[in-house]
Amino acid sequence: MAQRTRGIGAHSDFGALTLLLQDSIGGLEVFHKPTQSWHSVPPVKDAFVVNIGDMMERWTNNMYTSTLHRVISPVTSKDRYSVAFFNEGLLDQIIECIPTCLRPGEQPLYEPIRAEDHLRQRYGTSY
Image 1 (cartoon, helix red, strand yellow):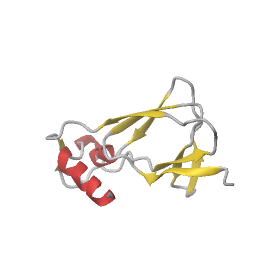
Image 2 (cartoon, helix red, strand yellow; image 1 turned 45 degrees about the horizontal axis):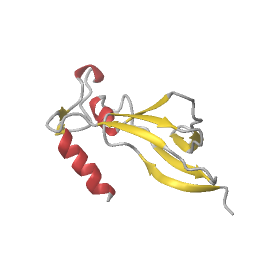
Image 3 (cartoon, helix red, strand yellow; image 1 turned 120 degrees about the vertical axis):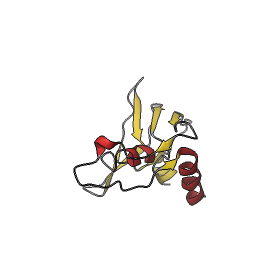
Image 4 (cartoon, one colour; image 1 turned 90 degrees about the horizontal axis):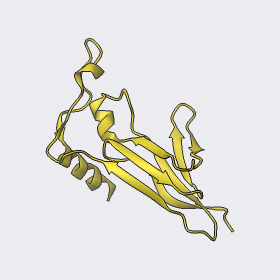
């Protein structure tokens, strides 16, 4: 019998920031790009995990990149719980590069987009 099962496949969050409260079971893993490896995020009692989302990546011109993560649920007789808050901003808010995130001579990597349109595009490519 497998000791681990897939909970949620690898993805980044579509909004700006995600706050996550884990139970003691855990299972959250983040991807470390330089080593191309997954690392478990041990639960810390009464602490939140903060994930940077795709909107923050756009705002900062990739200065801060969204967190690729997944859940590998351990096989256990206990139920696994987590509580997430997704900050996705106002639907009519324009997501565009923050001027201080551009180095001299650098251009924005992304065109300005309304938050609602960004979210619809991301959901559309995911399902």
